[in-house]
Image 1 (cartoon, helix red, strand yellow):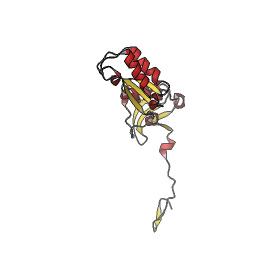
Image 2: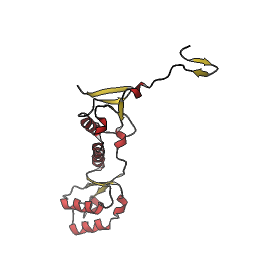
Image 3: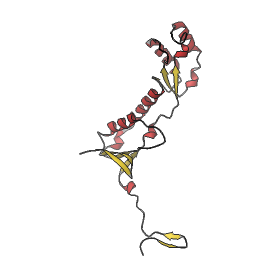
Length: 180
């Protein structure tokens, strides 16, 4: 007898269930795995300026020395100035020198810039050799907001080495690239 047979809620299936997705040879790549895990904190120069608009070197240096930089331990520090002020380049250097022993990374820009730059660094650190001559499906949906910049970067990196790139899920995907 082939097919299922049921008797009083006890069912047996005589045919083995085959996972065709697992046999497809597709490698799944979830970009959320490379999303920055460290907290990103914004360091705004504005409160450290005279009248929140003028940088006075002596006062600025004193303000930086008064900061407990350990609060930025292992965090990504996004350094910006939200005031419409002229900030000399050396001021950013002073912040970097002060934060460097503590922060995991120091990035010039706002929180979004820091997230994007860190995310791209994580993607660029992927050992691309593991994808040589493989069919890769890049996961399309998830819990985190993965921007188009990340999908562009992974496609750019994968294209020279893979057989194909797909977007989405194994059961429903969009072909992006196929080597000819």
